[in-house]
Length: 71
Image: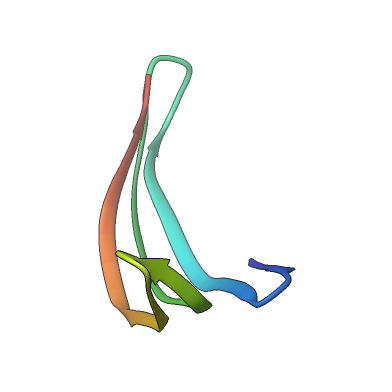
């Protein structure tokens, strides 16, 4: 899954890959484990704060694990 947004000098990129295994799957409840990798990049050019212009760049990336429960 990936998404990209750009407007003027701002840009946001969000991408992830995930695997999920459901080990309980019935009418009452679904329980599974998931693991993946996610990358989130945010770039804001000429961001103004207190009359000072700055370029802000954030980069978050790494693996994750989780439990998925639906009832």
